[in-house]
Structures are given as structure tokens and as C-alpha cells.
Image (cartoon, rainbow, N blue to C red; front, side, top):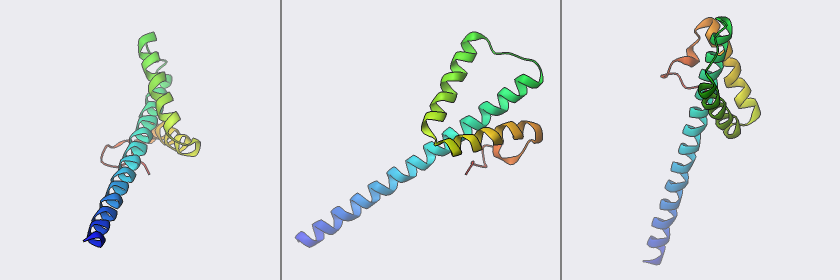
Length: 101
């Protein structure tokens, strides 16, 4: 009986670890998409000589900072560059059905 309990417990712990890993991947993709979209918005605003209101700028800066804090530098820069390029080319990473890797 003890061996069965240990087996069940070990499988349960592995499943929990798998779930945590999947959640981390999802969060990373979400923050990468945020950085990509923010860069596209910045590029568009710049191209039309537009500007955000102070409140919008504050919210945008906080959103970008959260994405930047969550992603490592290469991942953030990759997402940011994809967003900047995307604005110019309408590339696939902007589509919600095509997650950024």
C-alpha cells in the first residue's frame, strides 16, 4: 500500500510541475506578445507623428516595463523588434493565433 501511495504522490507532483511549466510558458508568450504589440503601436504613432496622452503613456510604460521585467533581454528585444518590423510588413507575429516563440 505504501508503494502505491508513493507512486500516486510522485505522479501528482509531476503533474503539478508540468502545469506550472505550462503556465510559465503561457506567461512568457503573453508578455512577448505585449512587447510586440507595444512596439508596433510605438512605431505607428511615430510614423504619424502621434502622441499618447500622459495617462496613456503612463499605462503604456508600466505595461512595457512589466513585459521587460518578465522576459529575459534577448526575448524582449526579439519581441520588440518583431513588433517594430511588423508594423511595416504586417508580419504573422501580430496575429493572435500565431504566438511568438
